[in-house]
Amino acid sequence: MSVFDKYLLKKDNLLKRRVEIDSSLYEQLEELAEIYDASINKLVNIAIIELLKTENVKIYKRPNNEIADSHNFAIRETSYEELEKLKSKYGLSIYKLINIAIYNALNS
Image (tube, rainbow, N blue to C red; front, side, top):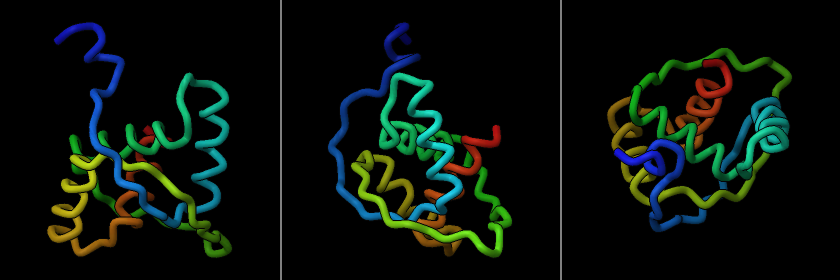
């Protein structure tokens, strides 16, 4: 493993998807995008990759007044294929899995 493998994602085909993200999670991603040299899209892809590695699929308690807004993302094709497998395994929608991935990444 080179130092570049440690810090950079390798190129992958990107699938454009519209995903509902809980507004509080998205706001936290916006704040992180100001801190790190990464777009919100990259932060979401990293969160998904981490979820796929750990398979830490635990439902979190969403505040009652929380709303979800739709956002466009370019999700890595290989990650999306793995999300499809988790969808079948856990019976959760892709959007819920992505929200879980973001929540886990923000709270780790």
